[in-house]
Length: 283
Ligand code: PD2
Ligand code: ZN
Image (cartoon, rainbow, N blue to C red; front, side, top):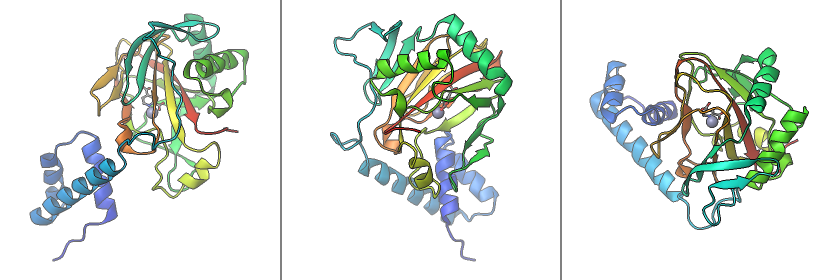
């Protein structure tokens, strides 16, 4: 019997690799579900090789990507004036650009965001890549809500601070999203940009173009777990109240190495606020 390697199978293989499963365990799973060993091995090899080639083809080559938000880190400052508040620079990475920030938000601002979000929480949706609509996603077991941009004095204050810090206009930002994770909840590794290969993406991009940067702000400190992980660069950012992690991506491609996830919360709750930044005006 001839077994056909479908696009769906290739996607599944890449998903397993992204989730950190070894080629051996993926092969074993394929054989367990009826794939012949020789077909499975070839499918694995071809899929991973092809993916590597595509990644290399799109690898950053001086200035090929779009402009992205960034902090002014000239002179390696340990603190940056974000207009109404001085923010600590805890750690920086050049490529991919990742900056861990201390004290982006005050305790009162963290509490204010949590209390304004709490009554509006619903099980988190993610963008449905087929249509551009929204759907429940089992990879995201948190509850969430979106604020409108500028919907309150507190939201406007935080948005203006981020805009100044990352030198990116307020009107290029989506509304702040708040997520609550209970014990066991997580956000599996993903990219924040919209996958150009998905049919719903052109519809999504009509509003402001691609996402080019993310700021994840920690509104509380879970007792255990809940870090933000970057598997491609071996980084885990601890969720410390008031702190934040910023990262940017100049093209919608894994070559940006901005794969990241919210590790499972082991004890306590985790609350974050996320600000996504677009290439253009988001209305
Ligand atoms: O809550 C997090 O740590 C997290 C991790 C990955 C949030 C997001 N992504 C996000 O909101 O995009
Ligand atoms: Zn994310």
